[in-house]
Every structure is written in structure tokens, then in C-alpha cells.
Image 1 (cartoon, rainbow, N blue to C red):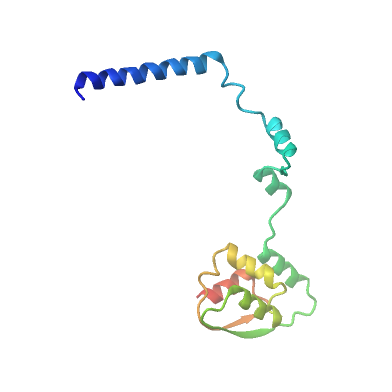
Image 2: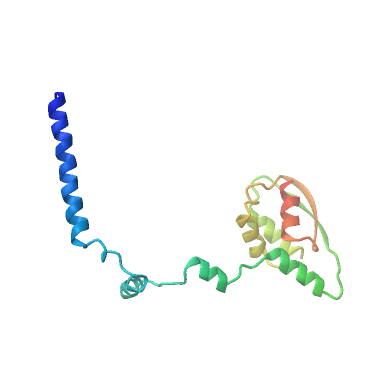
Length: 150
């Protein structure tokens, strides 16, 4: 293909693109193509989807639970603070679920699932070390996680 043919082909492509753009933007059809928020919501509801609040509004209406704060409030409200100490032995291939269950069984934490969720959300579950760790029931989730990962 020589230079003149290549230039002609390029000019044809540019010309065709210009014509299509002129018709697309000149007719005004593109303006009504995007549905409004209400139209989109109605369409989704009609098709059987569940429409919820946007993420920012959902976060405002439902405040995330802070396990550290809840644990500290529980400790402050206790009249007779009896400290329970436990030495947990973390072995090879021990899962976060097993560790949480063990801590719950020994009354170090109240909810095994809550502690497991905390470990997973903050990426501590990937950093758990093998060994023996001394933990107490007055430690926060963060303190427990730091103890198990260092």
C-alpha cells in the first residue's frame, strides 16, 4: 500500500467519523438516553431487583460496630472485674475460627464470630504466628490481634 492510498483511507475514516458524530450530536438523541435516578430505580424494581440506599447514605444510617470500643465499654460497666489469663498455643495450619473458638471457650472474648470478623477485616488473620501467647480477658480485639501476630 503506497502513501497516497493510506492517506486516502485515513481521510475517509476521518470523514465518516465526522458524519456519524454530526448526526449523533445534531439530532439530540444522546441527551435522553441516560435514565434519571428515579427511572432507573423503577426499572430495576419492576425487574425484581432490590434497590437500597447509596453507600454514603447507608453508612450514615448504620454506623459500623467498633469491637474495641464495645469491649472497653463492657469492661467499664463491670462491677467485679475478674481478670482471666490464658496461654493459647497456636499450631501450624490453625485457622482464625479455631483460635476464636478457643478464646471464646476460655472466656477471653465474648463472641467468637465477632473476633474472627475483626481479624479478617483488618487482615490480621493472614499474619498469625505459631507459638504460645498469654492473653487476658481485659485485652481489646486490637491487643489480642497484635499479640497473636507478633
